[in-house]
Length: 350
Figure 1 (cartoon, rainbow, N blue to C red):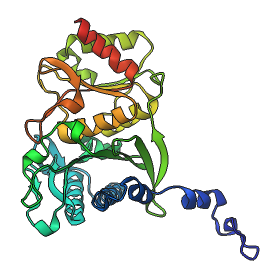
Figure 2: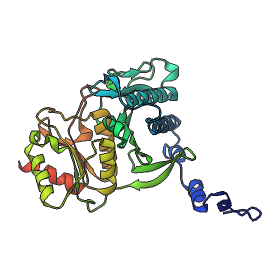
Figure 3: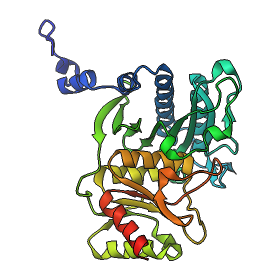
Figure 4: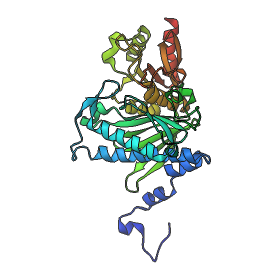
């Protein structure tokens, strides 16, 4: 590091290592420009998404002092109670994506109907599905929450407004997916279908900085299972048998109740996350377009497996599910190959 007339950064309270990391580490903006391979519209979209994540992180940080905790007094499209921060996050995401000028259709957990961009001068080729604030039921007790998104490129003619059929497609047709997690640190994890990349927000400079390429441990990682065991009595027998087996073979139980947090831990440490169908919710509880698909794409790109278990008469990949409507649901079994294969083996032998 340069020495200017004998002055050193440490004299001003700046550690050389900190400056070096901030200057030499790749930023998310650099990554977007390089990894979109000249696709200016995709770069604009990803920059709009990172901007939305920064604004949401700031709102969550100020939630207590600004009286943003608590219910907003309404329900969302899927019948969940809406928090004040749900509404703020939804507004941030919708406005950011609209103003990017490259979206033609938006699907939000907080909106009953899809948002279709009618103005030809303000729309582009992308359909985006998102959960603006996943796990918001935990927000009042300061548990980690996040945003999740998936991106499709429309198939219909660009000369007319998009239709819902442009996004009601299997997850294997997604061109990008990701999530942001707002916890002790704010992180953004993204994939374009060629690996999974993790960034952390440096609040001092307002940039997401590259942390690592995420890959599941080859041996399956830590023995952790993550599920809401309060629903155990309603699960399929193979799921019950797997959880029982975990309890007798040295597995630890970890369940936050925020999908972003539970999947993030599973990606980094290994193990398995389950939110299966049950007798009350025969399709499961998690939504396909903005929870199942993006997390399944990330899981598979990191070297894991993402399955529905037995669903609609067959065992299949989450990414092969064909959604029937924008808030459709599917069962979730995702994690390292070691553990997901064990669950599927129990289904096959049942």
